[in-house]
Length: 311
Length: 238
Image (cartoon, rainbow over all chains, first blue to last red; front, side, top):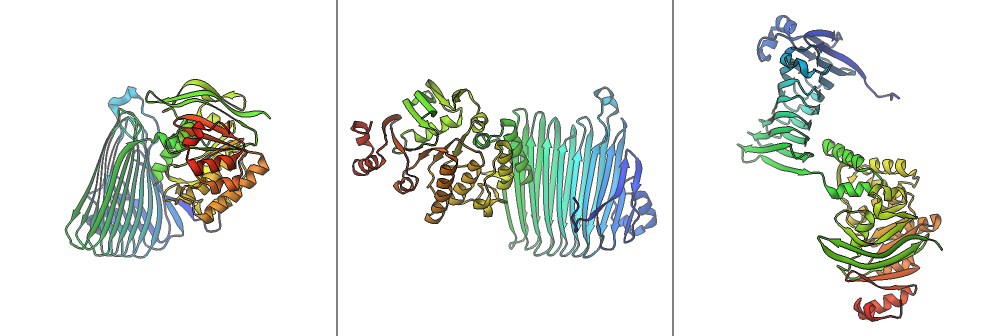
């Protein structure tokens, strides 16, 4: 049942293969294809990585009273998306965004020669004091290929809560997220990846450029059958700021290979960076504990996994 | 009275080493039994065997619980047949709130015990940064929602301060009586036994059950005066 304070959810952008299926028209915001934005707002050319061929531009200019949803899907065999996205949130606004990138259909192994790929690069600008709560979900077919490269720019006092969840991995994934934090800006990045039959390369970097900035990066990897994952999580402190890395891997199959590389780089003596990292298997003691409460072995493992991925 | 739990000539090994030797112990429905023994006597091993921990192998003997062959049951089947455990060192389950687990337990066992006792713990990660006392409170609320026929408690008082011990004991005694739950309690504390007032006491020494008696006070006095060693040579209680 909807509560009194529940915000409406509006679809801002929906793309299937190369076709835009839905785009939002709402006062206080501009949602356009990146191609249109490049022509209509020349100032955006400073931010687009290069001249876009496809992708979305979202510019939130006034406080919205709704949450936004974006969805980009792969369907036809042979589709190769090359998205170039830009999101701009003006000063002091709070925005709640859910983005899904997914395979709309299964790619039969018979058409592997016509493999699909999703390549996305983009920038997200949070002006002074703006806040973004962003849940980004990836759900791919095991035969697809995915490469994403996003950069977040947080101006003074801006805050970002970004959860990047890979529910189902593509066979090859290259993922990079970089966060630049100005004075007093805060970021809370969570990467939660369920990895099976995939070769995945993850990189996240937080740049603490301004005094009083604070970045927390949490990485949770679940290594299942055929997973080969290399994850590099890095914080670079250029100012008197704070950062913490928390990297955890859970091995569920002997064929999985997980590599976690936490890196702290300090260029200011007043910065405080910390990290913790661990890779292990499911605890037999935890499983027995839950089974002694009446959960089956499978239910116990699922609950522990759910907890691990929600930490 | 009918035996709810019947352990018969049980031998238990771990890493090919005999740990429990020829243990025979019965507990009737609603009966309260205390199990005592020095450190390393095998008390916790017996609990792990009842739990179904496969690090321990039963090499001889049998265990019947509610007319079923307990050894053949999986840990969750044991729980569903009415066997519940208050763990001595309950592990943390990161990222899962106690409330989530309690709801699952209630669903599985059709439990309806109020969560109030664990009110301040409900939305915290299970056993993560819980004090010793908080762990025991969380354990008790879980097991009372399992609708147990037999409750096995391994060291109720470890980590509990006097105030929380009183709280836990009050709730425990009330439910044991109300629901006629049988109890096997492992403890070193005479104070806990004063409150629980067990019907019987059993003493484990070096993997063997050396004493079973209904004269709990006498056994406790003997242990206090002469130590567990005396139980081995004293035939008065058996």
